[in-house]
Length: 76
Image (cartoon, rainbow, N blue to C red; front, side, top):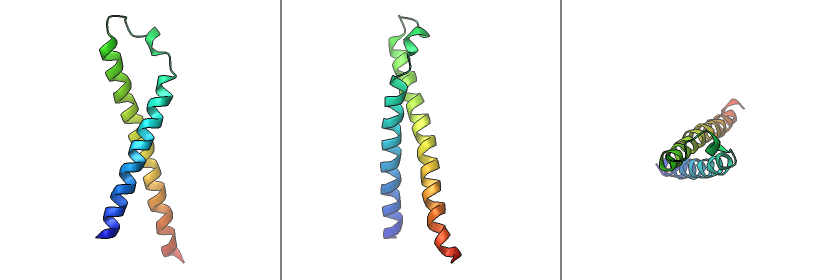
């Protein structure tokens, strides 16, 4: 039971770090050239949702990679 709790905490930390890194990376893209000037709020929501989607995807990959590498110990 304790191991599941630790796994959950590690997963949450990985997700939040990946979302923060994705948000920083997405801010570097000059999206204001595409979005109309009257749609600032929508552009901010788009950036946040894109960062969440990208961060979740990268986090899911990292968690799967960690889980798979931990299962390699069962091979030997």
